[in-house]
Image 1 (tube, rainbow over the protein chains, first blue to last red):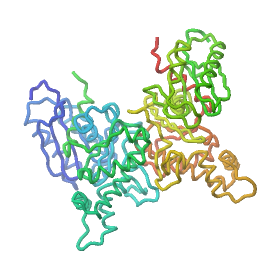
Image 2: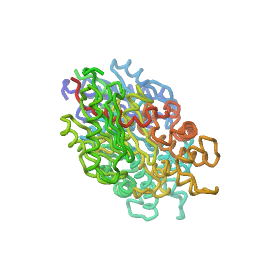
Image 3: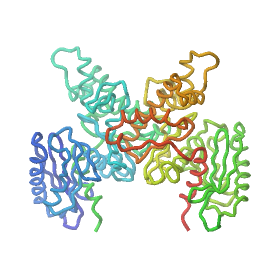
Length: 311
Length: 311
């Protein structure tokens, strides 16, 4: 890769693994490092790891990145560049990791919520390539969302846009760790699929978890298809609410749950078509994401490239 | 008013009355005419009325409008400048009223949904003056909505944004004329308040309608306050869903129902605070509209002014 091509460093801090990549403006990963996140040790132990991984990826190319983008799995105040809260890894709340990274490497650094980064990557380089406005929903252990508007992350007035996972769509539904009832997350996530499985398990041996139910559904098991279908139906309705409100070009579903493919996507689409306004139901495709786990680093790098002025 | 000041003609085609005004760029009504809409006679009879009212308002000033904006009470395809469907008045579906008006007056003319026009007016000149992003909800006989983004109407990818009234927030709720169940409109509108009143009426004489229930609630009647409170609670939750998703600066409630004031707004705010993410609940004011019935013509004129290039 020539020194002339624009690129950026993308960092994805996940609950399980931390990834760092140099990514070109075309969305190609030039060099990638991925290691286990020292989860319990928090920001203090993870930041040195991130610095080492950045040094290693930069050593692997002759690229001059325009900046560093960091995707973080928790609510982020983009305006203040601060982690608001960390649910999946302790020791990150109220930290400003990009301040330290920026100083260390003499580069502008930007912090972004990981679902926002993933959604941006899918719009710029993935399943929704070419779209202007997209709703991205990450359905994994939890549910994250991103509102992409005119090809950029829409942060909203208070840096809270995209909190799709905590929209209360069934006020009498099961309790959510957030303190409310019937949030999208507690009805539709991988964890929710695991909970519904436990509630109806009548088989022998231990009940399969969310991932196991997904595998059974893909294999055609009726019990598993029923559970996945219920989570998918609520997801389709939640998407219909969002699309009635702001009418994006396209909806992209990323994360572990949609990786089951049609066993999940078909009932999502069926419920969406039943609940959305007709003119929206006919016009709005619901697509599976296509960048997989790499969406995080690619999107984080894209955040840095969009925030850095073109020379 | 001098010929130099920028102004536009605003037209508001309501189910009951049709209003036409010349409106200055500061949002001031220079001249207004309002007459009963020949409802059953459709576009063919109403367009000549609109033309006459426009001539009369223009005769009342020496203003040179930059264009004509028309607010219409039904789904509008803004991109195609066509009425999609008319629920409140027959004979408008698939018409292009601005084509005729533009020719008649030799001015550019723009068709817009009436809730979008009302929301724009409240953001530019009314309760949300100074806001960039606002959610506007019109709660009257039905429920309409508008997404205002950076001071302009957000139409979305297929001209369907703002369909707040048909978000399905309770899939087991009462049937809606749109064919689905548990839409915001069938749970929260003035008609919904009237229906809930009939369902629980145990008094003597005829049951009061939506407007009568509102008057009783303002006077402190507990039966009426309970009904209004239920409609308001669902509205507060619907607003929390929208705000979690795209996080506007402010929410404005217009139309007849919010005119009850605190008897309605207090339970809306209480439910919003209970269902929205904490960071959104604390940061997002819910305000009553302040332009009243005039929001329609003022907003329609603003649509024309925003669409017409500055000289």
